[in-house]
Image (cartoon, rainbow, N blue to C red; front, side, top):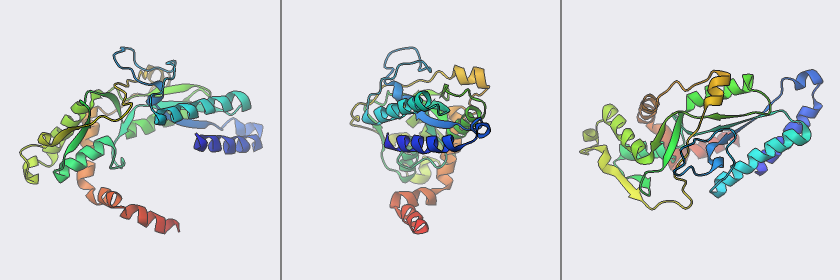
Length: 254
């Protein structure tokens, strides 16, 4: 909340200093999440740009708050803005402790692949390169003051994702090479986290119809690229997990 407030205030100061001609090319692009809409549970309708906000967790409540601040700065101070709400991203360079990288890395190490609760929580998965292309379309062609939902058209349960990670790994690095009968034997159910939403689903028809964007990657193709990347870049994620990467970056900064 405070981070967005500071960005908005500095952007407003900068915007007010611009000439009228330069102001035409300015926009504050706020990148948010589908979590602000809350839990779909058993409802059939996916989130669209008019879905009321109903955040479930402290994290999603802060994201919802930041969205509201952006709209308020637009209304009160005339700051040109765009808001995008995306579904779960995945792909290369994803932080190792996030769900899909964590599954891949644990499988490679022969460790348990943890799944919260019963693993039936549903998420819509969006390959990171598709998200970047959507952000560029919105930034350059979106209507100021509008919101665009960005989804990957890949709604899957967490247990389905874990199973597909195992299948993809079997093709790239067979489990027998890791001393295992199969990767799926590593899937382990753990205690569910508090306030865990059951389902998110994005209706991305607005950005598809108005800005001619759609995801290029299926979940299968995107996951294959992701798994290959983590298999081939073990030094990268090992450095991060060990803390060496952070120490190197701090040394560069200092």
